[in-house]
Amino acid sequence: MAGSIFNVDDNFIGNKRKMKELLPPAEESLKEAQKMQNTHRSLLESVRRIQSYGMEVMAGFIVGFDNDPEGIFDRQVQFIQESAIPLAMVGLLQALPGTQPYRRLHKEGRLVGEGTGNSLNFYLSFIPRIGARQLLKGFGSILQRIFNPKNYYARVRHFLAQCQPNTRRRSLNLPDCRALARSVLRQGILNRGGGGVTAAVNGTDPKGALSLRA
Image 1 (cartoon, rainbow, N blue to C red):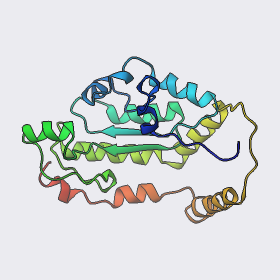
Image 2 (cartoon, helix red, strand yellow; image 1 turned 45 degrees about the vertical axis):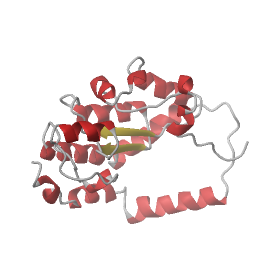
Image 3 (tube, rainbow, N blue to C red; image 1 turned 90 degrees about the vertical axis):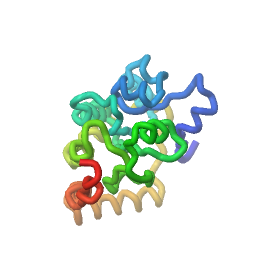
Image 4 (cartoon, rainbow, N blue to C red; image 1 turned 45 degrees about the horizontal axis):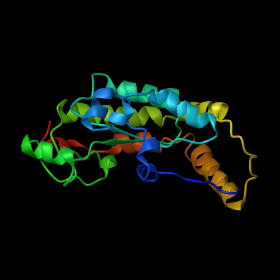
């Protein structure tokens, strides 16, 4: 079969017995998010097993839960690196209207604005338990570390080493070649390793968002 098959979380929700959501590694935060199904197995081993069949895992991670333990930022970086997930999407907890976190934070008087759904602008719509400054600093440190060229390329090499598809590899087509050429040009030549993420993190000015929450 040519091409790729991309499964997202709503594909699995259709059959809850086969649901394989991969969320943050901290068990207390999983319970807070009511993801009890993810507390009864090793997420690291689950990712490795999926990858061993030639499938790439794209995982989302969230920081900002009240039950996030001390050292959560280091733990997330460690998990992402050890699990060899090239496309790791890390975001700040969003308190969106109609959600359980929104109702709880509203009841506790900790809402200070409306969630935008965009966590990369370093905006917080609620007062986090650990303090806004510490949360934003930790969040930025995760992004800087996992997208550091050395760490990112190490994850890619690790993933390729343990990814063993049972099907015949297909040859590169023209769109693949164009994407590869753009990547080499932009990241390897023009950007010399990809400092764009670090610049974006360092270039943010969260003071406005912190003024009500620090």
